[in-house]
Length: 413
Ligand SMILES: Cc1ncc(COP(=O)(O)O)c(C=O)c1O
Image 1: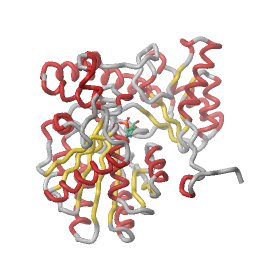
Image 2 (image 1 turned 90 degrees about the vertical axis):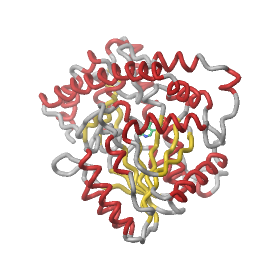
Image 3 (image 1 turned 90 degrees about the horizontal axis):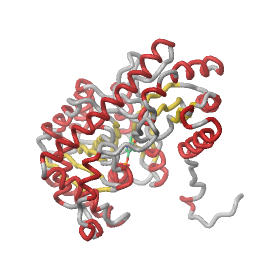
Image 4 (image 1 turned 180 degrees about the vertical axis):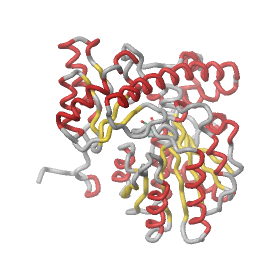
């Protein structure tokens, strides 16, 4: 056994940063064959044609207009009230649910997911998500002594598998009082799927029925990290969270990382939605307590930025305009990839919008390595290849699907 001073629960914790390693391999290869010949679809951030981070000019200007003394100060533990108000505004738009809504600032959406798992499941409990999922959900489960279980994401028609989801929820409800379900939509990572309004209706209805039995507490966490890259009209489902049973709490994980290109500013919040004032108050109390008990407070500069943007409709309008341009450009990249995939017969997971497209494969590791011979760098994620269309300019997207199909045919899987 290797030496260890770590406490029992911490022993063996280690996760190599796959994406970092693949990105490093792409950079090394670029030294040999030239940057222009490399297709680096590994990075989960929106990059321009030159591979540089895209930032929204109005966000940059607004951040830089803040007074340093103000940004350098501590933020209140639960977040600046103006920020929470602004977050409620930008998250829901015209679809604010008819309910008590409380907000607590967190370091990005990750902080919100952390607190939801920590405060709404018991030690050793299981929480649920779809079987295509963002890896850190599982890391967080391990980190907090929880388990994660999954349901089959898609049905045979390539739609969200409501049946499998609700079955899994009902099964878990037999053994646990609190059932936490994490749904990442719209623009799911890694598939790009978005639940339709009809699917949302059915899902909420099924969860409502379970909550009404009076045995379980249902906590639905909606991870909206990529919502600003979903087409306009993607917020209607929020209205479904109106007048839910008291035992049904919805938590929205809001992140400024992608939508405001503020990845490193670590700004976001969790919004608790309940028909019961006490439950909403409890949500505020326990999560702000967890802020104090973990990272203290969030990044004041990020919070001030959103509050300032919201106070000036002209600024916000500019942000929307700038972002829309990039959203359309991302959409075009995805369309180019998908059209080629269709033409060459490459199977992909159902995609609507967002940063990634996924190619299912049982030999993802080998195929990803083989693609590196063709100067294409993608991330194997166990059951498939994650193609970060967000990181590749339109020109370099052309030809990718054909090469992936070729590698798949050669290696099988
Ligand atoms: C699905 C999903 N949820 C949440 C996050 C959280 O991001 P952040 O903590 O930067 O807000 C990410 C970031 O990659 C993500 O992909």
